[in-house]
Length: 99
Figure 1: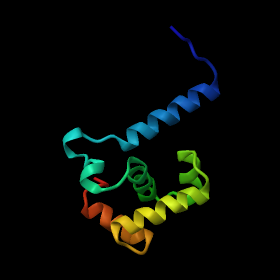
Figure 2: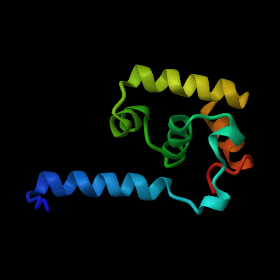
Figure 3: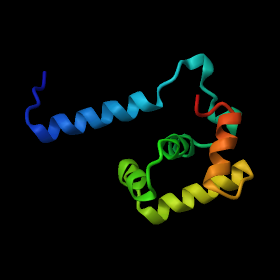
């Protein structure tokens, strides 16, 4: 058994829980990577984009550099066949990725 104490550890665990909770959905309604053609990382980026976060905040939350995040977003938009973040959001809603 491990006992963890301290504000930093508690804050980290809360952040991990919130990230997991934000991406949670009933198994029967969650489109799989195979169905959507999107990686888990791309689906997570879509969810974070839908909350209105800026690139810097999304990158920090995912532990990526801003440059890497923008590359992931560009690939995501190519896969969705869209030209803008707004269109990506519309396409994601139509595909049922942001329910």
